[in-house]
Length: 457
Image 1 (tube, one colour):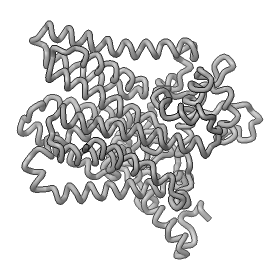
Image 2 (cartoon, rainbow, N blue to C red; image 1 turned 60 degrees about the vertical axis):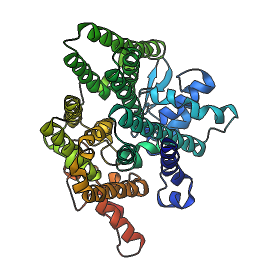
Image 3 (cartoon, helix red, strand yellow; image 1 turned 180 degrees about the horizontal axis):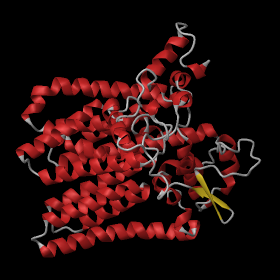
Image 4 (tube, rainbow, N blue to C red; image 1 turned 180 degrees about the vertical axis):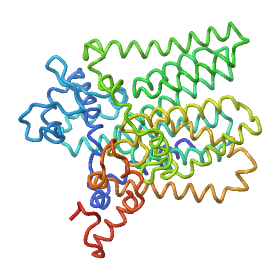
């Protein structure tokens, strides 16, 4: 019953606002980002044309989201979100989100739903919402079965995961790769913990490796958790040679299955790994102003993790309690903290660590499940009862930030202030932060200000 409530409530919260005309009059951004556009059309192409090629839809995509240096289509430049391979157009991003969205798209397309931007926006939002709803359901199951949390505490942490993070305002609203990565990573942890409890069932390790493998195919950042989970597996089973060998083989077999799928579609459609969207960025995009960027990942007024989701401070407190009191599975909590630390370090070296035109800490959202897991020692401790008023205040504030993002994120702040990765001073301004800029926008609409920014005149 609780899982059904989580499903229905979260789906309603994520998806229903998009259907309300009043909401659309406040935030007219129908599709959050052109990053998600090829995922939409790849799903359609798989169902209708049995291919990954997007040739039939190229003009439709290009006309709506052209290359910024070829808006009149005279230079024949391919938009950044696509690749041209042997005369065919194909998505520049991983295809896993498109694949798992097939069940959502298939019925409307079977009944010949017209391919219009309005219809695609509807399916885009529905798919993003359902992916995050499923992530929330398996988060709840993992907390209950893997960490033995009671139903109330598991529901609280699931609510934090779904509604007090950018999962609400961003990832549940479109077919982002991040939501898919989170869902698959949670499934990987779920089956890993099942194996930890019953180490004679190696199918669980196979499934864990399989889901982690597909998480990696969703976004390469999932590689860090895979490595650290494998190290944890080795060190916790070092004295059990037979079990370690079978567990490692099972886990690796799952990874191999996922890798085989990648090798197949890469060879058939991309021909060469260099045609994959991330390949040309691998050695040329480590251009951030570190360590300022690392601080920005956590504390930037317009992008910081702890600014947009202050309730995640209790994840850090949970780690402290786990280490101090050596709680059960303390080494696993240390692994989770390393995943977060290394991820934010790596992302902070990337030139677009702030996530481009998006709301909040999108680039760091990949590790949100591990933030939630780190809260377990806190919510299980006596300190939760002593500080729960503060916890719920920060939880409520975090939810309000996400509602604000749902209403106001439309890219206008970026258009007004974004100076790119070479000069990130705009990300540290409080006066011109996204929050204060949107307050000025409201004042302009009320006739109390003439303009929200110099460029807005």
